[in-house]
Amino acid sequence: MSFNPSFAFDNIKKSTTPIFDGNILYVGGIGPDNYTRIQDAVDNASVGDTVFVFSNASPYHENVFVDKSIFLIGEDKDMVVIDAGLYNAAITITADDVFVSGFTMICFHNNPDLWDSELVDILSVKNATIRDNIIQQNHIEYGSDRGGVILRNSSYCFIQNNTIIKDEDDRPCWGVVLMLGSAFINVSGNEVYNYTGGIYFQGCSENEIYMNYLHHNMDGLWINYGDNNIINNNIINFNTGEGIRIDDGYNNVIFGNIITDNGNGGNIDRGIGLIGGSGNYISYNHISNNNPSGIYILSADKNNIILNYISNNNIGVYCNHAYNNNIVRNNFILNGKNGYFDGFIYWRLRSIWKGNYWDEPRTKPYPIFGIGYFLFITINKWVVFDWHPAQEPYDIGV
Image (cartoon, rainbow, N blue to C red; front, side, top):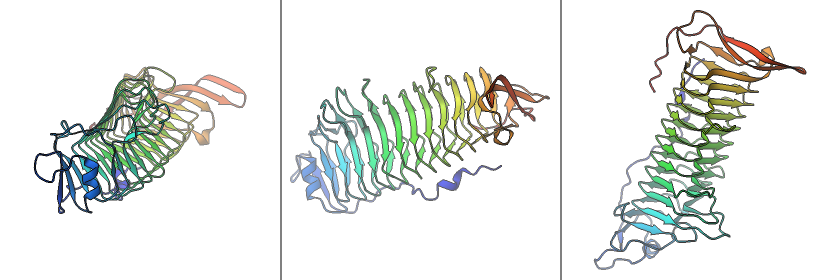
């Protein structure tokens, strides 16, 4: 059994520093020919131009529509504010090759008829970059169920190094959303908190989520029907529900993440949840202090849980009607139960527990207890074994 996390990186283009080689149109400054409104400058720009926005006239009460390939740059993200008000997005992008950086974007949605609202709306484009911004949903009384940044039917885009936050209220709202087959999206270096979910994918594949800090949301990251996504080197902690959840996903790779202190003990709370799907890899993660479980696998098969540090969870790995999974060479340290399972007893469908380190060096096979079902019989203390437990913990390096 081998693990090669690099297979899905080849098609994801890496970001580069933009080259500003067109004209520069200025907004809000004190010199001649400065524009008063951002939208007026955008409308008069040509492909390749830069619209540079000064802080002098901030806040800008606008809903900016970018329909051409330009650079939209704010002087200082802490000082240049685009206030979207009660309606529509702060910035809507409908053209390829748009670069946006240096803004604070805010809104106050309280329209009961407005259910599809976000601060940055990216529609059917390629190579849009949203970098180094503050994206803040303020108090939401009604409406919005989306949130910070949404990409629909878009590809090769970059959502990088943004602070994406929401006021503490109970409206369902997401930090970053990928929908309608968006692919080859790079979501990296962002801090996302106070949302219903930090990052949400619906039917999107071949994306990379790395080096984000997802904390104090309900769920950190949720992929619904997505394949071949890479989730690596993120810090995902203090979310009240799940750190990472993948529903009916195939061949996703989760590695090198720190996933700690997620869940409040509810039935759907855990560090990592695999619900359906197959062929996912969970490797080189630090999974600790999640309640009730570190890794939960439900009705999913042929997944690989290899070389993780799994500690201080109520249950380390819980397989619930999950078969043919490989739980191999992990460190299990001081969990309430290191492993647990619940499912039908079929030898050919069994999951493999092999070569794990179980709290201390062991010379005898390590038993994993669970509930087994055979025909109409329930066996409350069925047992499987790790026949060759490791004698010392693995150097996982997380």
